[in-house]
Amino acid sequence: MTARIYADQVRLLVRAIPAIAHEEIFALKGGTAINLFVRKPLKRFPA
Image (cartoon, rainbow, N blue to C red; front, side, top):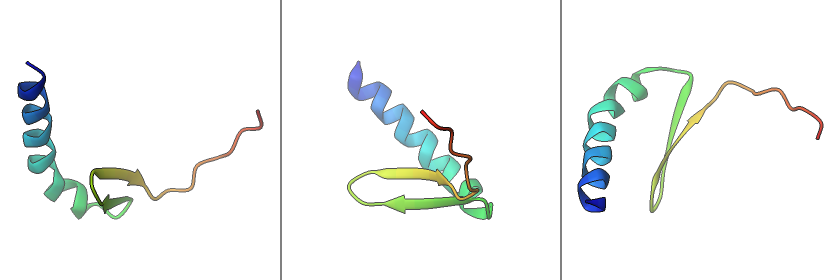
């Protein structure tokens, strides 16, 4: 079951990458995993 969920998530990500890469506000960073980052500066809130 876990392998199927993982495969479904990977399939969705592979289908979404072209649309994500087309947008200028997103950055794709890859390594041993693919991580998605929003390039827009985020406000910092004091803890």
